[in-house]
Length: 232
Image (cartoon, rainbow, N blue to C red; front, top):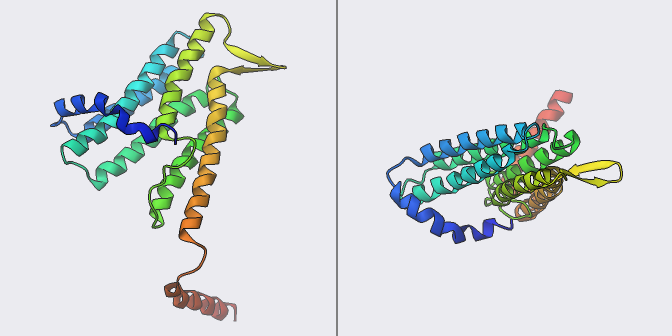
């Protein structure tokens, strides 16, 4: 993750607001972020029919990302960190990702095959990070493409696409293929997302090791015997 390493650099933007809303339930802020993410997805989808919606979509993405960071900051400052809060934050993040990225994938801005690979890469990246924790490791944030990176790119590229449309160059011509700027972003999500997912699999596998624990041996033998008996 490129930008996730610099999350603390944004504290000067978060702490004053979090201090002001210290009595607000962090989950309420999470819901606001999710609603704005849904709105950004709607705007991104319909921007294919009206390019003037692209700047609105970009800023909706930015506001959603801000709310996503703000809820955690409020929870920390108000000492309201909980397992439920962390869980709902992860759930809402995945839905927010899909609202934005899947909206582009099914729009006219992007070839459906590229969109499918991008969605797969983003989902698998997040899944492999949490799965590492689920099997007894730590939550993984390693890799080329993290959530902060996705939010920033989903803010920048709609603006680039909007400017390109304004000047009459909505796509780059490569031979007989036209590649919009939003599709370039999706190609990166497909490549970097799937690469990051595989990278996290390798890291987790090496951390866990492939040697079976001695405590598992009795259970393993019992399964073998059970299979032998049923076969007989």
